[in-house]
Image 1: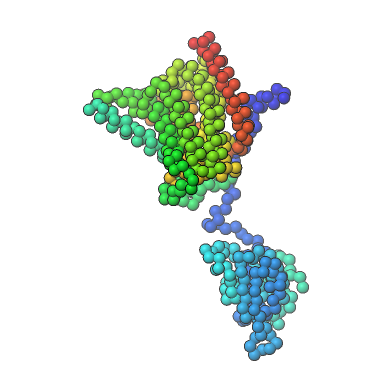
Image 2 (image 1 turned 60 degrees about the vertical axis):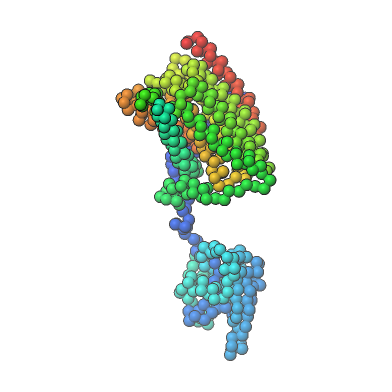
Length: 179
Length: 351
């Protein structure tokens, strides 16, 4: 150990250097904290939040009960009970539709799998509840989430290009859905 | 009659000092979190009251109403005794600290010193003695909890306190040589007239700056503060010796830790930085205002030291146990001993 290092050790040089660093942070105080419940960060437009079932602009449900979302889901969140539309034997719809959001990992595979864009991801994330059974959502609740997050609905499927994603119309900056 | 007046005056003084210390503790809990937050680019508590200034009230209420749990298999008597044993020595040390000028007031035929509860002639020994009794509270609390973490924390604390108390005791010997007194009032009075008379600088004699550094490091270790907070190492021992404590018993340990911090800051102020004396004579003001300026300078210096405690905590990581022991015995102890020898020689040659 040479003389310079001895002097550095004796005068606590490194410790003083560290204390200077903390003091400079105190003097140039610029907090990076976001006071969460009072101020919220701006979410990116491709934020994957709460799932929702969507409707056409005349109020009919988009879902045709094909079960593809159920098949695509890696966490087995979705359960679909499919049924014929009464009086129209060629059309089907989801009689019951359940999502167990306690298991959902928000991967968005169900949204990608949906052939008619009946599923959407909203920007909602404040879904902490006291009873976890409240996170077992049925069809009405999912439709309500869709209604309140996407008030402007699209035209019926037969009046628009078949592969235009429902919510990709609103967000031009994100990658378009593969055909 | 005289006894009655004296009793009333002393009890009033004790009450005033206790309230002042406990209020300072409440303030410190907030200040520490705030200062740590600011140093780490955070905000600290912000929710309770404007800018979180009512946080100590909320903390106090929470601790007061919490359930008091005694773990199964714990030694109930020792478990209840330990927090008291650790809090009382922390508060009792303030009895000999002079907060202001050394005045003697005549109240109804009783000589009364308004700024020191009792000026006993072995004041500093008294503080050291009670500081080591405080260690019993920590060790007993760790042992009686029937928990391995607590026991480890208590054992660490025992070894740490023994090795660092020695350094505290030795580092102040230089000051005692210069002032030739153990009374804190006499030591303070000897440092008046300007900052060059403070024993940190000690104009005309051997400066006690090195002793001060040893004292401050040892005090940080003795009050179990970062970077020497091994007895309560959060990342290793959950909370160390008070892992099993909750509610008011936990609050007692908490008060004891902060009370010790304040006490150590007061002792450092009195011994090395002139107590209530201003750095320059003209800042002390006229004789009749000495009580005000004296209290101001004393508080100012004490808060400076408390800020140093926070600053160290914000900067330094925790030492490993063998590093702590080696530093205490192999570095600080020889420095403190050398300081005594050099001070004694200088004092002998230039009395």
